[in-house]
Length: 202
Image (cartoon, rainbow, N blue to C red):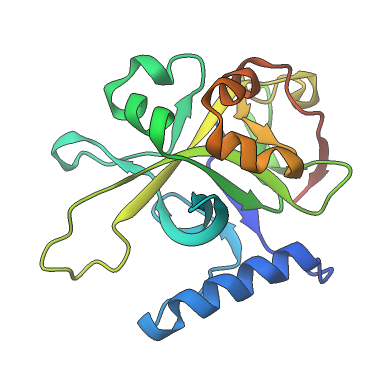
């Protein structure tokens, strides 16, 4: 599965700027800012939730904590998430959306790594990934971000051309609210054919 994604837009996209400004307004007083560029597990990144019926943007860290502090879980298989203790409750009650400007996978040939490939949608500078979130207890409130997210994945389509067997569950922008509020609809998203992608060398 992909190991990082991009949150960086040099074209001045209005939606990207709205997300950055929303995070700045909410977190600047805590000394937190939006990281732009390549996002890795354990980085803090913007996440969209539903609050009082309205989509809102928060910062969360990427990756659920494994039991006994054994590292992080960055992704969850959409086909089996409802069966896993770590993911079942978040899938039912705490779905989220991770805005990005594309995600990365490695181009490999005969076991050799040739470079990174950036995947995005053809019709938008933004790519929205379906996710789940949960909250962890903090020690003496020293951790300003107690919430963490994982990205849901599904079998990769032909756009990957054998690069990898999994890809993120991708949402169109007009599906975001229903993904966050409508569980039966969310199930159809997780089981449908994957969104077509374009790929460029990073």
